[in-house]
Structure formats: structure tokens, C-alpha cells
Length: 411
Image (tube, rainbow, N blue to C red; front, side, top):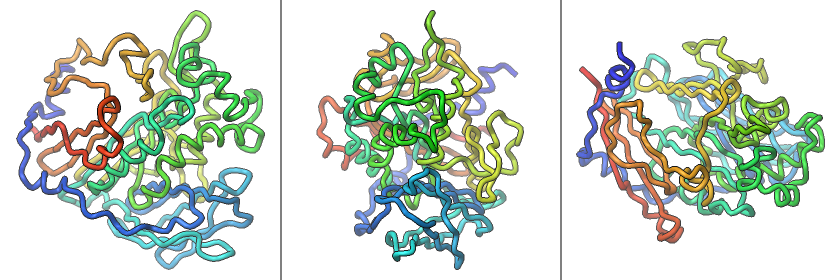
């Protein structure tokens, strides 16, 4: 089959801006919930499958003994992911598919936060009739380096969460802290300013367990912790890594080719994932011999750093592949004012000339997110944008779709 025809068939090639009234009714956010008491919890990011949960958490103060997660009548001891006792993870298996669970965190001194609810995903053979997924990309950036303030980015994500997505996919560039790439290290992480904020890395030693661990926390922490906080505690997340998550921009010059990553770049990416956001959970239908697909077993859970699956029963399967470790000379850029393609590369985003594609909206360089509603017979996609040049941050709280599209299943 011709590749262009395959792409056309697989997408359904039926795009329409006419959406049913019930979808717009769903887009009206519910009243804000009562304030949740985060207590001593600084951030919570949960991963989930049909029978497992993997939660990454950090606390406002180091814990001297393992905290305990209570779920389904079980007590699961946390595993420390740093050397100071600030970052922990909780792995739970043997749960029932598609079921909400009440979770609580305790330490020797008592409760660490208010209980909260988190659901497992439907069983692989289940037939749910709807799944709403939040997609966003390039969410990283340090306030001191000219990026959109973390508080504003958090506001965008909270607006997205107000529409009630069941899962969220964060597509790369959670950190901007380029160290050696000629252009990236000057515009996305100026060397002098970076060292003033975090200190300098020692590239010949390990990241976790060495002085580098403190530098990593200072560099990545302000880009991740205030952005997510505990807002996603009830929304399973799938985090993909991109070039800047390896602490470099994807560049190739006569002096340096940044990808595939060096040993130290790989260590930085793995350590950031280990501390801040969950790896991908097992999926029986995913090949187990993909590159970087298995990092061994921790807490009895085999996990994948680079290849994941968002499986929502028989309704939806999203394959999530980070190919940065095996690919070179490609990749997107970030969200700071100088990071848009037109500024950084001198050319705006455009549809590749070798693909036949119906362009409903020309690429634009503004901040926002996408909500995709999956049904058995169609996908309905809503696009949201916020113009930093002309709109105040308060406008984010009232964002509505500026464009909608429907992809129908081919006969």
C-alpha cells in the first residue's frame, strides 16, 4: 500500500468542524472543587494501567523513614529515589481494572496529606464508550531564564484539567537546561546564569548520590514541582522525554553533534525521570525487546523508560515512543519567546512537503493544549490557545476551543 494512502486511511480523512451539541455541553467546566489539603506533599504524579499504579512524590521536608501509601486495605512502603529523603515512589499491583480507589499517605508522624481518589484504567478487553485525553508539549522552563512563568503554565494546565480528562500525555521537554549545545546553551540556558542558579555538573560522576544530585534538583525542580504540584493526583500521566530532557538541544555543527546522547546526558534524563515523573508500566501487548524498553524490576514492577502504552480498554491504544536515545539530527523546540521555530530556526512551522494532508488550521506559535475525545466511531479534537502578547493570564481561566475537528472511522 502507498504510504500516503496508508496515512489517509488510518486517519479516516474525514475532518469536520461541525460537532454535536453534547460535546460542547461537556466542555463547560464543573464548579471548582473544594480546596484539597496537600499537607507536606510538594508534588504527586501518578502513572496507571489496568491493574497497577506507580506514583512519584516529593515532600516539603526530607523524611527519615519510609512513608506508607494506603490503598485497597493494603499498606505499601515508599521507595526513596534520592539520597536526602525528599523524593519517593509507590508501586502498587494486583488492583481491579477500571475502579476508583481512595489513597492516603502517612509517615511516622501521622498523615502527610488529605486522602484522594485515583482510578485504574479499564481492562484490555473492556469496551468503554468514551475516553478524554489531555495532550500538551514543551511544558518546561525556569522562571529566571525568561520562560513563561510556571504559575501561568500551571494555570493553563488547571484550565485543561477543569474539562475532566481521564488521562494526560506530557510530550517532552519538561526541562530546559542545555549545557553544551552551541545555540541551546546560549539561548535556552545561558551558561553563566545556569551555574549561578544551580551550580555546575561534574560530568565524570553519577547524578544520583553525588553532588550532581543537588545540582539536578536546583535545575529541574523549579521547572516541574510548581508546574504540577498535586493538581494531577487523580489524573494518570504519561511522560515522554525529548531532546531538552537530556539537557541539550538537538544540534549538529562541526564542533558537536548532541544526539544520540552521551553517557552523562543519559544519566541526567534517567535521574530526572526517577525523581519527578513515572516510567511506563508493563503492557502485555507491547514487545519487550524494544531499545530501552526495560530497566529491570524495581518494587516488583518492570518498567520502561522510553516505550509506553496508553491502553484504555478496546477503545484506545496510544503508543508512546521516545527515540532520542537511538536517533540523531531531528526534533522540536521549546516554549520560551526565543524558542518558537520562527525565532530559533528562522523558519515557521509547516506541513512537510512530502505528505498529503488537509490543513484545517495553519500552525500558530501560541501557548495552549489539546483535548481529544475518543469514541468507538470517531475522535473529536478541541484546540485551545492563549496569546501571551495580547491576553492577560486571567484569560486562561475562560479559555474555550478556538478550533474543533472530527476524525471518523473508515468503513
